[in-house]
Amino acid sequence: MRTALLTLLLVVSGAGAAHAAEHPNFVFFLVDDLGWADVGCYGSTYHETPNIDKLAGGGMRFTNGYAACPVCSPTRASIMTGRHPVRVDITDWIPGTNANNVKGRRFEHIDDRDDLAPEETTIAETLHDNGYQTFFAGKWHLGNKGNWPTEQGFDINIGGHDKGSPPGGYYAPWKNPVLEAKKEGEYLTERLTEESIHFLETRDKAKPFLLYLAYYNVHTPIQPYKKRVDHYQEKAKQFEGETPVQPEGAGKSRMRQDNPQYASMVAAVDDSVGAILDALDRLSLTDDTVVIFFSDNGGLCTTGGIGPTSNLPLRSGKGWLYEGGVREPMIIRAPGVTKPGSVCETPVVSMDFFPTMLSLAGLPAMPKLHVDGESLVPLLEGKAATEDRTFYWHYPHYHGSKWTPGASIRDGDWKLIEFYEDDRVELFNLQSDPGEQHDLSQSNPEKTAELRQKLKAWQTKMKAKMPQEVAGYKKG
Image (tube, rainbow, N blue to C red; front, top):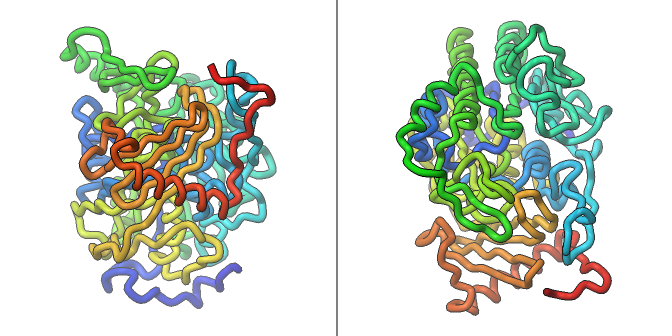
């Protein structure tokens, strides 16, 4: 199923303007737990992200870019493979929340894979087999040793292993098995940035490259970026009273961005993006390099206490199937293809990156692989979507955000969420109600029934693992 060598490639017809690079480089920024509203170009007024905003100004910003799951590992697998998390059998973060530890639960634990199966074909493998040099830095979280980035198509792995949270924290001495600190107090994000720039400076210049920087920021532990936190502590003085919160299920949602420590961690990502974009300029690589910016799930807003960020105007966050949990900041700058400063409102999803990168690289589509993704190149060129797509989320697990098993579907402007724990369903029209505040399931039973049937049919087709009730369970 692999394609031929790069020297035999042909530019895909319609892949972009004539001056687009024939075999462009790729820089993929994947941020961990960054919320849709955490950056300036998506509306944040407390966080400051001038470099990310500048990237958006030079490319296309997507307002309806979705992660395939409201937690990390499934979305990461979907990016790597172009396949839905259900299809690769990674539907929870690895190793996930053990349902047996959830008091009063209705459902048994659902087992899924704790790694990305070796037989899956990744975008890194595909590009590598077609002449690309491949570099990975940061958070992997798709399997134990023996199934790390270098076993999944990357030539180089800096810091990627089985853990999702940075072991030992963000400051040296950390405990990363594949990244030894150089000095006491070294900051992890700065080190990953330096390693990425070093790769750009020392790469094989005869080959195009994929640089995949998967930040550990802004995942917990929330540790301030010391170079930036004072600014946000001062800025937080504008707020009066305690941080407002709102109930969400058994948890609470933060309703204001006012956390200096978290804001400084966002700033660390922005500084890193700026440094790498500057390196592309300095090395005369900008015009030949596609840059992608994305997050693996929504910002951590809802917990048993209070999360570190707010995703308003979207509802809830990481772990939940409301928009705040799955809608992400998403930017693509493809020189010669994207119009600077353009905005795309068409819904897209993380499985789309695989076929999009193939198309931009002049490689033929591989629909039997990236079966759940579609190339975004027509949208990047400014063309209108030819038809509405239907998107599905399946999250049948318990999560520390107080989410309980459920699933959801977006069909056009309609969004339906099923909550299995209490046999509840909610229906929203995202065009008129993007904050999902007005449940229409009772007033529009026809649409509710239609979407429930469509979701069930998809789950059946995909052989999705459904929650099984605990023996002897009684409601209430």
